[in-house]
Image (cartoon, rainbow, N blue to C red):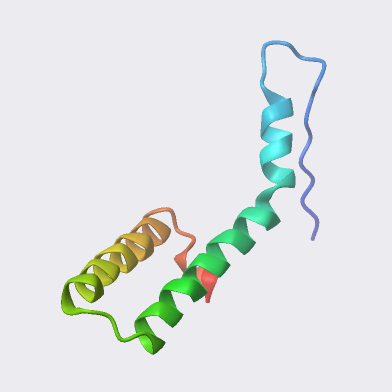
Length: 78
C-alpha cells in the first residue's frame, strides 16, 4: 500500500507551499512533542518539588495529554 501527497505550487489560489512545509517538518514536530513528554515525565518522577509546583506540573501534564488525545495523536506518542 502506498500513500502519495501531491502539492501544486503553481496554483495561486491554494496554499500548498505552506502545507508542504508543514508536512516536511512533521518528524521534527513529533520529536519536539516526544522530548517534552519525556521532560514532563522526568520532572514528575525524579524531582522532589514543593507541593504547589508539583500540583502545577500535574495540571500542565494533564492539559498536554488532553490536547494530544483531543487531536488523536496521543496513541502515536507511546
